Image (cartoon, rainbow, N blue to C red; front, side, top):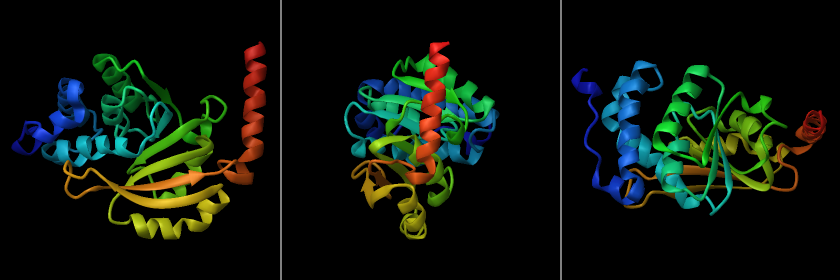
Length: 238
């Protein structure tokens, strides 16, 4: 293993953030640095900054996730932000949604190894699981796609009055402005940019929050959602 791919010791902030799950967070970081790199889930250059840029950056998302809700992590990839969020919030019911088999295999291994009983791994694209996945309170995402495209995948998975929380970087404000029309058509009733992780990460993690009203996905997805619900009921009767 090259020097650039060596995992540094966990920072003190990690002990505070992960608490009783600190040892599991360390094991997850090791899995990302080893199997994650070997399987092409993360680049070797990311290993030295796994704690600050990835695990802690994602874990602090918990600051804006309500208690006891259902969460779908869209395009979960190597489990970011879903797994760090699960490690700090055992009150949540989290689905890691990912279309690629090699990634879902990795996610399943991690969930089983760390004993994350409140986490489910589902293989599929967001647009394919409507009717299979019970609508959730919160959709999370990180580095999946520009906000307008991400919203077309994530917002329809929400239950009424749910919210999408997207971890973004310096482009957050620009993306939110560009996506305003698309978000409105998808049933968004309020949007905001929130920064989290004070005293834990520097720079702070930037979260774009999209709150929806009665019809997540808007008119475009209302008929599709109703059809999916009817299909689901028919399958259950069989």
